[in-house]
Length: 147
Image (cartoon, rainbow, N blue to C red; front, side, top):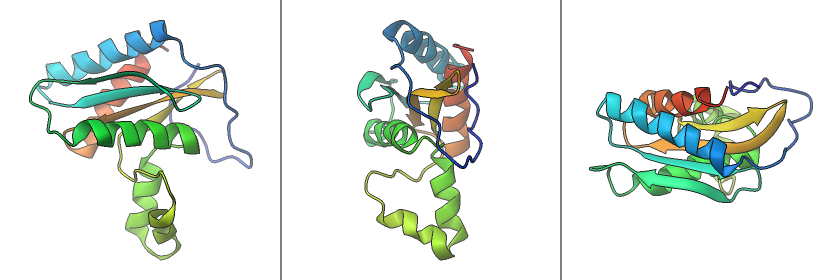
């Protein structure tokens, strides 16, 4: 199983069976531990392959908007089967990348990843509350817990 950024393929990765609650809990604990180790107040959201929320939590002192942003990141990663940074980078590049601003349901902020198991998308994780690269660090810690 791999949870790294999926390669750009001629055809998108298929959706798989939804992530189980047990695996989502392992991810959440690891992500939370990474955030707490760094004293980062974040919201962490894990969605399944159907785009339904499995787990969501907001650590103490997290800004109010972070839960909605983390949810948007998790759902964007699932629905588009790509890391959310792809959309952020496309918009930052300008030109044709600005089209992403018109796509419904896109949260174009780094920190959301599809969760991939055996070449299939089984869910998504989104983190928000600190700098985007720190959100990514927390999300990756969560994904590493189920490798």
